[in-house]
Structure formats: C-alpha cells, structure tokens
Length: 210
Image 1 (cartoon, one colour):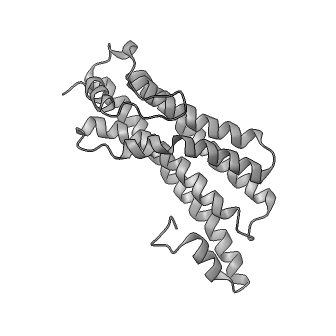
Image 2 (cartoon, rainbow, N blue to C red):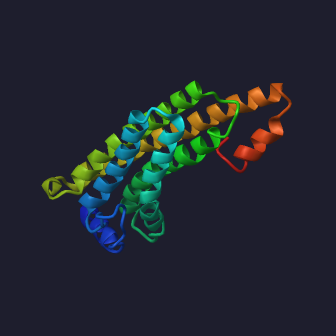
C-alpha cells in the first residue's frame, strides 16, 4: 500500500498559496489541518461569546467567509488516490458543516416562526456539533505530522477510516438537525396557512436538506 502520508503531502503541495486568513498559507499537511481546526474553533468561540443573536451571526458569517476560498480550492482538487481522497473528504465535511450552519441559520434569522430564545438554542446546537467535528480532525493532524512516521500503513489507515466515519456521522447529524428545525417552522406555518413562505425561504425537499 502506498504511504498515505507521502500521497497526502503531494496532494497538498499542489494547492500552495491558498490563503485561509491573512497570514495563513497552505504549504504542508500540518498547516492544512490546523487551518481547518482553527477556523471551526473560531466559529464555535464566536457563537459562545457574543450574546446578541444578530451580532453573533454576523461575526460567525465573517469567520466562515474568511475560510470559504480555502474550502473551494480544496473541493476543486481531483484525481486523488483512494486513501488521500478519504482524508480530503473528511476535511471538507467539516467545512460543509460550517456551510450548513451559516447558510441555514441565516435563513432562520429571517423566519418569524422562531423567537430569539429558540434561535440562540439552535445556534448553540450548530456550534456544538461543529466543535465535536473539529476535535476529530486533531487525530488526522497527528498522522500527517513527522512524529507519526513510526505508524505503519494499516495503523494510519485505521485512524483515517475511524475519523472519516465519525465526522460523517456528525455531518449527517447536522443535516438531520437542520431538517428538524426547518420542519418545526413548516408545521407552525401550516397552522397559519403560510407554508408557501417557508418553502420559498428554505426551498423544497428536493432542493435543500429536508
């Protein structure tokens, strides 16, 4: 089996000079994973420290947009071997969790079916799920550091497989969490004969997450 560390390093070297924040440039696997973890943690920290819901969301969105170019570049990388693609998918799923949080919560902010207390609780739920996903990436960071060179291919792949599965579970949980919150709004709108407004805001089942 090809050494996943060398494969992933080669893959990352092909997307150099992609900035996440003003000073962050992707040049090696350690920086790649660190950038994702830092971005996710910054969103979580902002979610937990800003008390006003609107101000909170504006700050979260700002952090998210700072890293969006990075995620877009990473998504554009194709033709990876299977092992490296699983690492890429794991990293991108954390970015997609951030995307679901920002884009859907932004719509919920404009939904009169949710009050301020409910929006605060929803934001906390999103940030908690994102935080748990970011924690898992620390395991990936360990296997692409020089200190992990003692790992054999099986040990390395076991870690990659485990982290990929657990992050995917969180990704699916965020989708479910989003669906349930939107369905609450839909049911409330139905009682008021206002379902079309909800469908227009969030999209149909085939278009969105629910």
